[in-house]
Structures are given as structure tokens and as C-alpha cells.
Length: 444
Image (cartoon, rainbow, N blue to C red):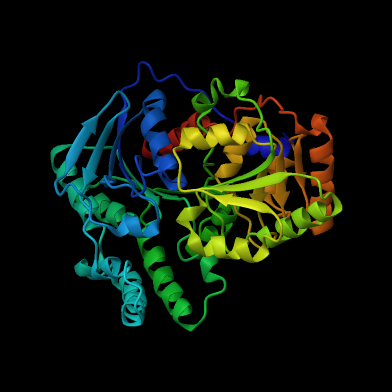
């Protein structure tokens, strides 16, 4: 790993055996059993905090329905009471979820319902911080408040988005005189989705900026999941980028035990896991794949987008670009199952763009498998920096480059070999250690 990148990840090991654990209350919306990248981040804190001096309690919502698509997230929870679960890691408090009128309209596709839903979506985004009826996540705040009335904690942590959790943390911080930490999985008013906003979007962005600046001004620490988030947030808040540390998502190292014996698929396979964003250059990849297939008509290649049935709009994009390629889409799958698919694939596909510097959580699982990674197109940013250190990773930004890469990989088995991952910088445990150290130092 290059020196300047390594210095950013230097870890300090501290012994915690004789030091009483500080108590942390974590507000998280996405959380297991809901299978999402967003839920893995706070779950890692629950799992590892005790090793590094913090005793965690998570407050989240009930995820007691089967989630096959985004609409299912808006169904009311089956359980209508607050429950508590205790394990060796810590405690999880789950609050009921009650859909708003907008949520209820999501399953209806008639034109009046769609128009009303869009109007209510804008209204909810603009007013959820001011009007109680617009806040459909309020049971999390109420459950956290009840817990704090009976239990003193040393720090409150909110994981956004949704960023209404930041407001909850700020309010609880004032009421119970406890410092709070805001952790950005994505940007709030600085999110890339606002870059292309038009009239109504710009109004929403303006409102969100004012709310965000007011709320996060009271946070003891702000952390992000990528350097670009820290830079944008620094401009908004007046803090220095170096004062907004990056806590990367990482991978759960224990989940890869025993996976090295899984054989490659018989058919040459290219695998993409999880979310596909509108700005990622999937068209460049398919242009290259189809060029390769035209040049090599006997080649048999399968492409699988695991979990993309959850994002039907992106499936439409792919179908428009797919050409002669053999492409399959799946529902969301358990994380362990996706990892098995990754390690048995010939190529792991990572889609990016130079216009938006993000670090997609899937890249860390990709790295941990040791399997070859193809990034299309070059982000000319942090992903390039990370992948440039791996000998079996390739980056191409043209159809010709993709086609040539596939030719070399398909016809040369030596290019299909795994590389043993010997760098544990990006494990969830080590990233959680860095987070815990920052928190303990700030609240000491």
C-alpha cells in the first residue's frame, strides 16, 4: 500500500482489559436482519465495540417482514411494541414502524396516487424536522428517550442516512447532557444526488442545508465513509477536512474463513454485487463485453447482478445496453451467500465514474475474496488508489479496454488466479477500532 494511503489508516492498539467500558447508544435505521450495506456499518460497531472500550446499545426499527424490494421497507412492522435483545456484544432495542400516508401510496401506481405520493415525498423531506406527522421514524426517538431515562450513557452515535437520526441524537444530547457523534454513510445536503437537481430539488437541498448546518454544529465528532464526503462536509460546516475523519466500511474477516476451497464456476462468470447507481458507467462495460463477444463468437460468458431486483430502474438501464450478453438479476441474498458467489466468479465487476468520488462498500468484500476485480470506468480518485495496490485488479474506461481485458482473462487461466489478501487495514474490526479510539479520545 502506498505510504500516504497507509498513513491515513495507521492503527493504534490500546489495552482495554482494566478500563471500565464507556456506554454508547447507537441510533441506526438499517440494521440486521435487514440485508443492506447500510446495516452492516452499525452492526460492526455492535459486534466489535466491546473489544475497544465501548459497551453498545443499538436502537433501530423492527425489520420483521421479508424485504424483496424498496416498497417492502414501507410496510408496517408486524410487531407494534418495543423489544429488547441482549447478546455478548451488547443490546438491541427495536421500535415499531408505522408508514406515513406517502409510504402507503407507494404500492399504488395510478396517476393520481403517483402525483400525490411525489408531492408528499417532497413535503415529508421538507417538514420531517418540524412537523411530527411528517416523521415516520419517530418511534426510534421515543424508544431511545425511554432508554435514556433509565440508563446513563457516555456518548450517542447516529448513523445516517436517514439524517433525521442526527436530529434525534442532537435532541437527546441536549436533554440528557450527553455528547453525540454524527456518522455519514452518505452525504446529506452534500449528497451527489443533489448535483443534478432542478427547481424543486434545489429548494429541498437549500432547506436540508440549513437544517444540517444547525443540527451538526452541536456534534462532538463528525465522521464519514469516504474522503470526498469529508471534503464536501468541511465546506458546509466550516470544519477542516482532517477534522472529519474517514471510517471506511470494510469487510467482516471471519466471513471469509473456509471460502478459499470454493471452486470457480464452470462458465466464465462476471459478478456484480449490490446497488447500481444511475451515474455508474454500466454502458461502457456492456459495450466492451459485446465487442469481446463479437470478436470471439464462441466465448461463453455469464454476467450476474446479485441483488439488483431491488432496484428495477437500474435493470431497465442494463436491458437497454445488454446487447448479446447473457445477464441475470437476482433478489437480495444473505451476505454469506453473496460472498460464495464472489469467490467462485472469474471477475468481480466494480462500476464507477470520474465525476463522483465514492467508495462503494462492495469493494472491500471484493478485495477480501482475492478474486480479480475489473473497474469500469476509472474514478481517478480513491478507488483507483486502493485498487492500484492489487496485482489482479484492472481499470478500464473504454469499450476497447474492457474487451481486451476480457480476452486476456478469458483465454489465459493464469489471469484468473486469486491473490491472497494479507492487508487487514480494511477489516470491519480495524475500522471499528479506529472509530472507537476517536470517540474515547473525544469524550475523555
